[in-house]
Length: 416
Image (cartoon, rainbow, N blue to C red; front, side, top):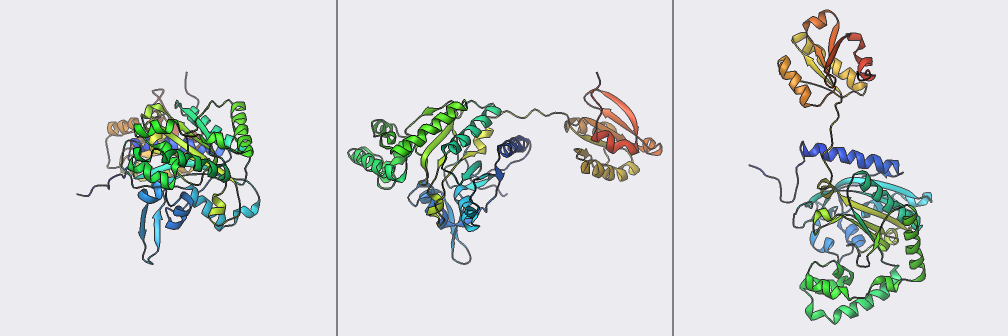
């Protein structure tokens, strides 16, 4: 018997209905905010992620699904989406349009890591990217959009923000941080020792208690920001306050990928325990240039769908649509034609197979949460009538066959 691979997830009803309900809700909201949907390939050249994410990051070193294709070229299942969006932006010279681009995406990603609650090896992310502006208002808008989204979804959260500064200010800071950590090198665990050599900022992410104590006294990057970095970070805070978005400054937020500059942020939910981040992102002003394009500032964020599903309630189903109860051979012949006509009119329409009894079909209609049952039997067909049962109001009436489409396209007001 075949079984799914470790860390992979099947999605079937009723869980898939909850998933799809919230997916539509998220995508609709992001469209309302002016973001346009994009999709990128699940497979890209390995070098794209190695160069963008950072060759020494944990994602590249340990988590990527990489392999040689039939042309002996190294390709990778995408571990994140931002690099692919930027690759498309450069490949198609979209930067030549000299306008700000606002994109959103929803799709699967792949990372080889230990599966746990809310985190799988194949996982789904939704996120946004804004390319073409260094205006701090863009940072604030991305943050505010997700603050409002989680408010709409009724998810309690806290927002933490930080600034990682520009390349120049971070270079100065990293020298200070490295010098500090080297004093404790003998006390560092193997993972932190590796990070000290490659990306000391990541030591702030350690879950080891002894390392956390060391990092409490480490220099903070906010003390090393240049004047322009401070101005930018100050404006982001000003815009968030004006928008009524509550936040806390946390100078330990560094994000896991190398391309971040200046603003970095995380939304967290204590309902998820230790792994409490539900969304994270920030500014990446140098990534387009790093991948071969011109200098184009950008900002974005991403969030995991699996974690979201642990926090949102099951949707409350409203009675909607029509269930055709067909009785007899002639009714069965007509059923698909009537269903097709209603569906083309935008009406959710269902029916049963296998010649089930009248009661069995009504039970099926009730289970499918439809508003109306359309009863089509031999007598009804002979008189060119159908019986319409209102499942919500427990009432019924006869209408002509020629009225079906208009009746359900413009259903009558609920009876008092």
